[in-house]
Image (cartoon, rainbow, N blue to C red; front, side, top):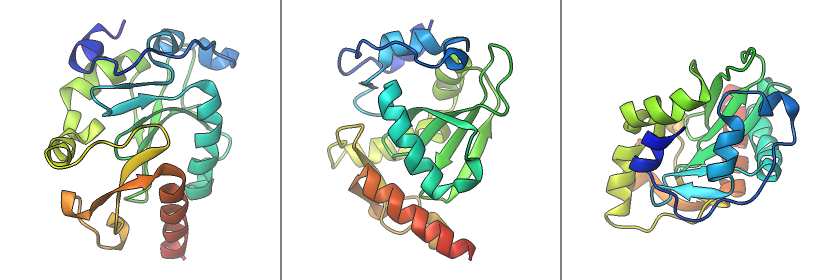
Length: 193
């Protein structure tokens, strides 16, 4: 499982040894296997980072500060280099099939992704890396900058897209993930009135 993803985006470090602490998550197809190959690891020179269960709890608080309307329905799984968070949507996941939400605090939006976990990594990430991993911006950014060390850092927007910022390298900066999410969440709340 995840052979295609791992071939395209090899691990940057060894995974942490962790066990799934939530029976519902452990029953989802591919969840336990992903923790085994990737918990606490980044992939593809930092393009994606898989959270440990402990980190996921911390990230859930960041997401809920910015997107309180999702309280009670998320289990964070991973973040990309832009600090966007992939979370299992507990409301839409059924049986052993996970559904996902992609939280983009820089755009102020959350997007539903309708596929299982193995398909997310092996199909969606590989089939459309610009959409799902910001691979086009990643290539531009890494031509001139280092990728921040996940999970506590990310590359964030200086001016959020929902306030007229542009999705281009000139509008990106190395950021502390918690500060970035907190600030963008406050701006999102103010913009929504």
